[in-house]
Amino acid sequence: MPKRPIQRPDLAGPFPENVAIIMDGNGRWAEGKGLRRVFGHRRGANVVRDITTACAEMGMNSLTLYAFSVENWQRPEREIRYLMRLLERYLVEERPTLMENDIRLRGIGRLADLPAGPLATLRETERLTADNTGMTLRLALSYGGRSEIADAVKSVVEDVRKGALDPADIDEETLRAHLYDPHTPDPDLVIRTAGEMRLSNFLLWQASYSELYVCDVCWPQFGRDQLLAAIHSYAGRVRKFGGLTGPKRAQLGPAH
Ligand code: IPE
Ligand code: IPE
Ligand code: MG
Image (cartoon, rainbow, N blue to C red):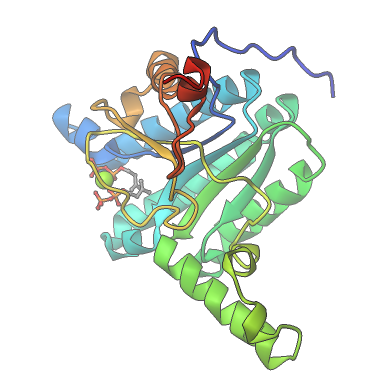
């Protein structure tokens, strides 16, 4: 597959190699136009295509999209059915774009909760894109940060029970290794659309030190300009991870 040259934006600071997005506001966008919520979801799926391609073109390492939370199962059955049909269609229609852009797709979450059709389509799309070496696109489906940690603990305990792990050796890295996708680095930047200042149970473990960016536009209106604004905002941040030596501070030299 011919690879396109990477086009990094001109930034005043570091580029966020790993980004996660809480794609919120589909329903509000549709209702604001006098349309049913599902129209927002349909438009939102098109935005996924455009933003994914934009991130791959910039040479991002990973993009994680919050598509359906464990809590979203509480929504009306009709809306859930629509979302699941949309997911299945998206996964099939996106295959050429994923291959063209060298993107590897992975699902994270309690995937066994998905209906048989979308689950099989997801597995097949993962298989078809498994050898792509460009960006990793993770779709968080039936995902919850708390259930991910609970599932990890269960699997750690299972290793202890089998005698494969000594409880005295359990540390943060043990737990990380039992998360849904331990090999993708933590997000540098978490973007949330539609203005809510909360994580809604997204990547609770991984986002410990992520930079947060919330914008007011609803997901169906999120475009490359908004993505770039978030990336520029990230480039201007000082990340200290609890220490004192952020890159900006280091540049100031020892006298400061
Ligand atoms: C995000 O949009 C999509 C999903 C959660 C599936 P919403 O459906 O939450 O839209 P709002 O927040 O109600 O506007
Ligand atoms: C978060 O949005 C989940 C997804 C974007 C998939 P929600 O709309 O479900 O979150 P709350 O209810 O506003 O916290
Ligand atoms: Mg919402």
